[in-house]
Amino acid sequence: MSTFDAEWLALREAYDLPARSDEVEQAFIQALPNDRVQLMDLASGSGATVTALSHKLRQSGRQEQNWTLIDFDAGLLARAVEKHAGKPDLSVSARTVNLATDLSALPYQDIDAVTASAFFDLVSQEFIVELVGHLARHRLPLLASLTYDGRTEWTPHNGSDATILGAFNQHQTGNKGFGAALGPNAPAILAGELEKAGYRVIRQTSDWVIPTGHLPMQTALLEGWLQVAMELEVDPRIRANWDADRRRQMAANGLSMTVGHVDLCAIPED
Image 1: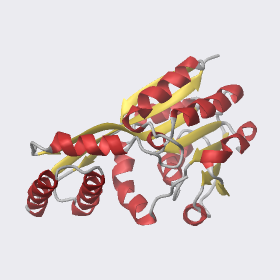
Image 2 (image 1 turned 180 degrees about the horizontal axis):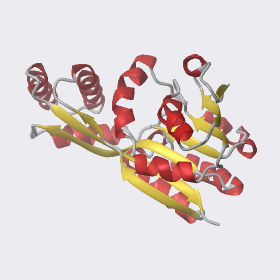
Image 3 (image 1 turned 90 degrees about the vertical axis):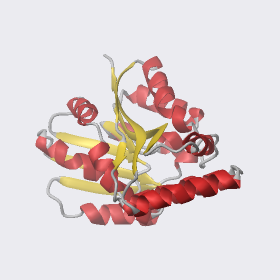
């Protein structure tokens, strides 16, 4: 199972939070017990899901929240627990687990629902089938936030955009520690498996909107796309020209980006 750099997680949080679908989150919250809730968050990283949901749960009347954070990176989990320590009516604990091998060992019987953010595009179809099986046996709701769906748009357009994006989307289907990753196909496959298991699925787009002038995020994304294009041997001239064009636009505060994600909640049907 792979892990992510804390600096990247902190950078993306400013774009994750406004992108999340309030409609999907409210549908998920309505499926939870009315007062005390026990939640398990998969691939928690530094605890972004708790940050996004805890105040909404409190506003909805869920006055006692108990979160179990699951991740392979003990350092990130420690940061997450520390970040939320001392908050009223909020208990956060952590378990270091390799989800690629130990999915069946999680405490499904002790929780009310499962959450995950920016995760399911990294896993295989076999992983999703196994997870949905565990969820269905325990009739647990799921909130899957910010799953990448393959859409990226740059403004202004460049003639090489499709080549760069095609390379990135191909790379997203490589092995991220769980076997062949679903990449952009994840939202549709996850929804399909949940519906087959008797769940009602609510979906909405939750795109990152990265305006002009947001140079740290734009630079991080640009460098990631170019690294992938190099690994997949995209024509060096295409890479160089696209890179130079985009950097000129960034320097002039003339580039904006939208990166496509999907939020999904699944409610077990009676």
